[in-house]
Amino acid sequence: MQDYINPKLILESSAMEPGQVTWQSPSNLAIIKYWGKHGRQLPRNPSISFTLQTSVTQTQIDYKPREVAGQGVSLEFLFQGEPNPGFGEKQKIFMESLLDIFPFLSQMDLTIRSGNSFPHSAGIASSASSMSALALCLCSIEDQLFGTLGEDDAFDQKASFVARLGSGSACRSIYGGMALWGKTGEVAGSTDGWAIPMVEDIHPVFQTFHDDIMIVSKEEKSVSSRAGHGLMEENPFATPRYEQANRRLHELLPALRQGDIEQFGRIAEDEALSLHALMMTSNPSYVLMQPNTLEMINRIRRFRAETGHPVYFSLDAGPNLHLLYPEDAIHEIRPFIDEELGPLCEEGAWLPDWVGEGPEEI
Ligand code: DP6
Image (cartoon, rainbow, N blue to C red; front, side, top):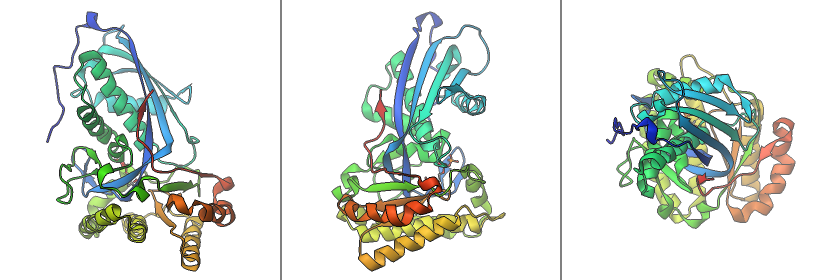
């Protein structure tokens, strides 16, 4: 597998002009979940996701020749316009881990300004959007300085590779529509190293699918995804889980091609519940769903059974619920949200979102 280690990406200091890059990049929602990893951020099973449209991070990097020579990366980090030493330190450690891939980063003074479209404390995972935005910015800087990533495919592939190192799920946010990450015999060109776009294999009904986010709790989750992945190593159900994910991918791909919403919805819900079952069977076990998450699940299933409307749910590693439905059901589903789900959200907060077009350079 390509590892992108390249000691040649280093500049004559005199050749560097100050510059700036800005990317806006979305979050994504996995239908087949990535849960369990090994090595340098390699997944234990393939995953596939919807890229979202409105839940985005915008990241701007200003760079200039480094004034005071030193080790590592020289970085000032502002989040939502304010200095944020906690986030800044994490980004610095991550960028220092990339010095074998982008050695020129040690030659610069960098200022990163990053912000999310969604409220900071909405309890929404922001690592996919923030790490993909950062990776895209770093690839743009490389391309500005060295002209090495002019081809779109080469650029996207490297951005996805780097995003993966920051946060596994982030590698899928590089592409609009749907993206697949992880080697599987089902899809040519799939690999553990980066995600690939799935646009051509997706029925139009899924290209405009809605994915509204019901905020059950704005609180930060008690166990991070990173820790959760770690617990999979000792989980007694790990091996059958990875087999199950592969089997479900095998069932999902034809449903996506054919526009089979019922099969899609069944798999999406089963995956969400399997993810949380893995948390409950870890050692130590933990529960991230809350009473209102379960109440919403029951109401969605009851509404579906009573009305026949195609509405399904998914969950990330947290209590918030993603409501999935096709565009042509919106007039039936929105009143259902207003009457039945909205009142279960913290302060009534929910975020309309849908399958998006992918990142944008600003
Ligand atoms: C439940 O990508 O957040 O959202 O690689 O440790 O950063 P790290 O984990 P992360 O895990 C995401 C898990 C998930 C499922 C998914 O997005 O596939």
